[in-house]
Length: 556
Image (cartoon, rainbow, N blue to C red; front, side, top):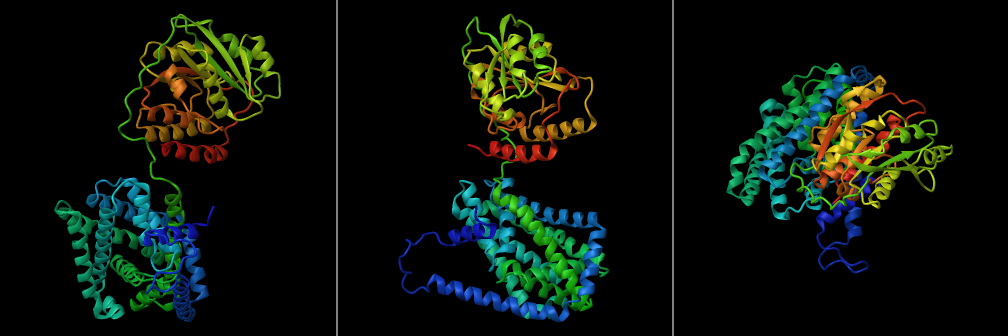
């Protein structure tokens, strides 16, 4: 996998070069060769970086920097709150982008802004701005023209707002640092914003005041970072001065040529702070730490946005319910039980299952997932059909195999339950009932609406948190997202896909709901496991499940 900065550079290159020249062909007549342009860019960037470093070495104070760094560590909640406000600034920009480009979802808007932010902190020459357009074009079906026009409108409004905020907050400081060109620049930005809105059409003109107000509010929120760092470092900045310092620094970064604006950012922020009367040593410390916090945010959140498509939930409108499959009059109910080293309990689970469910014969299948004990023999002696996996593949793989084996029998309903006696085999009638009556296609036994004999506090808390996550992702009233007792209609069992071997709980629910199958819950009884130990360990569980959920949500 290419390094993030190389991937970003490639995206930027493609966005700026719509037609790729065949490998080995000479450059077009009248244009400088790519190697020459690359060399010029590198030399220019190194020259600016060297000048900035020379300037900074004259004002840097090691003790001041160390003192400010220790102050940040003493108040992590204050720093976190400042970064949350910084993130809210981008959420506001994402919302305002949708005002001028309604076809853009909030998730795609948020992701494109953060990929752009990441690019600007990794690439020189503000190439991250090109990634804002590229990201949207690659992830949506929106036409290029309105995406570009809306980007110009939003970015012009952003820069116009920062220029006017600087003039309003500290006019003397802005005039001293920027000279007379700030007002003509503001006029040019206003024209660019209007031009972008004109291209989008008259229907978007009415959104311009809202977009501009959102841009101004976003810059005020961004100023929280320098304000908090200065406060912790013992530098007394007023909110207006924090806005002014942010505005001047951002204005200086408009044409940054070094990766992330390193050096020029610190130089501009230090100059702004010293113009406000702050000593050069503390001023540099505040500038450097502010830039470091913003860079850390861009790397973490921008990195997530770069590799993560933006669908975090199921769509609000799901497909219609699939037509049910024909069921033979003598079709059985099939129960399958994944087993891995459960010799102490599996025979009891099989033995406690009834012979009939809803007037239909019950067939029990045990999926032996590479057990090293006598689980398979105990299950077979208790009357179950045993299907052996080649070795221990994982619970998700066992559920996938169980569904496939059940479908081969032409069932009227399929029920899955664990083999550890946490769930009551006698409750199978309640699970299969809504499927057999045609009321539902996918039924989950809910422990939290039923009876829980005992559940460890940390397990209860974890189940509650994960269930809240599933409820938010599915937009359904899910009360138990991790239950090990589930029933399926024949169609749902055939259509179900478990996309990873480790587990099944969240991805199976997302898969079936996304295909339109009707969801239902029934209360069940739950008891603490009689023996053995759960395979679920929080760290490993999240490492395995979260990527799989992401794949499930963003699969075709």
